[in-house]
Structures are given as C-alpha cells and as structure tokens.
Image 1 (tube, rainbow, N blue to C red):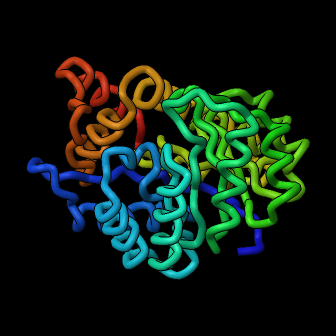
Image 2: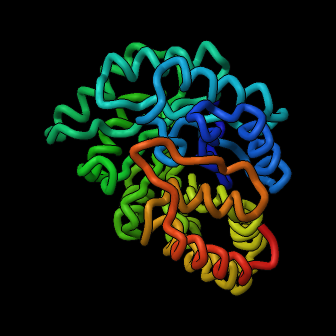
Length: 296
C-alpha cells in the first residue's frame, strides 16, 4: 500500500451476544452499514473493538469476518498491538495471512517505558512482519504520549510505516506531527472532536470511534472540507463533537457506542466484562441526544 490513507476509517465495535460470544452476523451487518455510509475503511480489533478482551483466535475470527464482508476498495486495518512485542508480531502475522491491508499498532501499555524502549518495540516489530503499519498513540488508554519527534524518527527509518493515528486530543501535537512527518505518512485524527481541525492543518483523515454511530456525518465533514464548503463542514463538526463528548469522552465509550447503535437498530451488542452496559439514566440521555440527529 503505497498511496496515502485518506478519509474516514471506523474502529468498529465488536458485537457480543448475551452469552459473550461474538455476533458474526451482527459484525457483518455493521461492516455493510459503514460501507453504505461511504467510509473508506474499517479497523477491527482496535480499542473500541475491545481488543484487549479478545483472545488470539477471537481476533482472527473478527478480522476474517470483516475481510470477508468488505467490498473492493474498502481498506481493512487490523488492530494488532498488545503489551508484548512478540505477541504483537504474532497477531500482525495473523492479520497479514488473513489479508488485512495494514496493521494498527498501539504503543505498549501497563509498564512505564522510555522513549528508547518504545522505539525499540516498533523497530523489532517492523523488522519481523511484512505489512504496512499505522502507529497508534492513545494516551488515555496507555498512559504514554508518543511525541511527534519520536514518530518522525521512526518514520524516517522505516518506510513500512504509512500512518499515525493520534488520539491525544491535542491539535497542537497533531499539527507538529503533520509538520515533521506529514510529507511521508498519513496523519490521522484519532478523536472525533479533532477531525476537521486535523484536516485543516493538512491531515489526511481520521480513525474515529464516533463514526461507529454517525458514519455519514463523519464522511460529510470530509467531503465538505474537500469541496471547500468550510462553513457546512464546521456545522457538521459541531454536531459530531457534541455527540462525541458524551458517548466517547464523558462515559465509557465501549458501552455508550454500543448502546447508541442498539438504539439505532444496529447490532451494537453487549459489552464484554468487566465493562457494564450504561445506566438507565445514561441510556435515556443517549436517546435524547440521538433524537437531535436527523440520520445515523
């Protein structure tokens, strides 16, 4: 994959049945929903897909189901990052064997690692797999913020890296990423509220959790921006930000996104333990918010 990643990519939820099993039919239905909405790709087994709660075989099942369902031209970027370097290599090789277009690899979490250890982690992985890689920075889950300078250093050394998903929520940091590495890779917004600002600064798109619920609106932001209709793009961005603030930032994004999908008659399914469904009060607030949007 030599062309840059562009557009809207959905880090899709993994729908579970009440007994905890993966709802394969529901997952296929969601993929069709995102395709029909005009999204450019899906990202199974990311943070929003509850990847840390999936075993290796379940990850394979999710990725294979998504790949089997997508139509030509829609990219599949498999989340393969874990705490372990060796496990990440195994999962990335699995994704490559299944036919994924690229791997999204999160920085290691739990342990407090140095920048040199983070760099070595990526270097070891990139030397062992034959798959394009998107680096994933999500400080709220990992406790580590990947600095733009370190990303640029990795990008300069490894042409296999084709993008970075930055979920820091800092447009200043994203701007620096674009300045240092944007000519070589795709810089992608990792939060719904920074999508339009990222595009305005020269980014190529976004991997947006909120696109699970309002994929068409996210696609419209991208289209309106590319058409030069900035006022229209801003109006849609404001709407998406309101929903993102509640579903993704204020409460547990896994349970809230799934609840929102269920209320839209889409197969969001149940969250996997230890995550609980939203409270009745939160469910009611989600319902109220969804009624302010004319379409999903």
